[in-house]
Amino acid sequence: GEDGLTDKQAETLDSLLSKIKLTELQAKTRDELIVKRDAEPTLSAGGKTLVEDFVVQELYDFKPTFGSRETDKGNMVEDDAISFYNDFFMTSYQKYDDTEALSYGIYTGHPDIVSKGERKVIDIKSPWSKKTFPKTIDDAKNSVYEWQVKQYLYMLGKMTGEDWRTGEIAYVLVSTPESLLNEWDDDSMHYVDNLPENFRITVVPVELTDKDIAKFESREKVAVKYYEEYKQVILNKNK
Image (cartoon, rainbow, N blue to C red; front, side, top):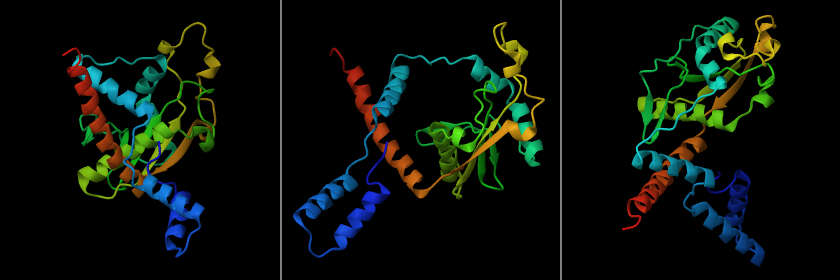
């Protein structure tokens, strides 16, 4: 969701505020934009559902389970994918130590690669097959993954007091382990070692902006507020 004004709306408001005399319509537009600019951010329906899930997990004492062949492959070939990335770009990145979870405020996470010298985060994605692998940067655009990397950068900046702004999402196509395939799978969709190396990697740059930082902080406040409100609804039910 979007908070406050869009860039275009902000420009319109600045222009209207600079004018000495306004038409009735312009004055109405000015007032509406001021209200929108100053309004408290709100969670989207999806955001509320996510917060509600956390409340339910806490009060009913359970953790959700996740599992699929696609996620299993990502975990199994992660080291191979990082090695391929390093060989292709002649780098020497290492997997971030899983015991060093990032945490700031309500945010937590485990980035794949953290380059402290460059203040850069790289998240490795290992697509399931040749078909699901994004062949171009445009194909690879994914706002959820981009915000995931931005969240890592935000946390690192807050935790270290340094300016972390640069990240990447690296899609690396690695052959699928045979143990994950069944008799109905087409092996040719999963064996990729014979492909040219440049066919097997697509990198999407990610940048954390000041606007993104403001959104993290404003959304944290409204998320915590809604968390407490929804929690009280359940706690006080039938009383």
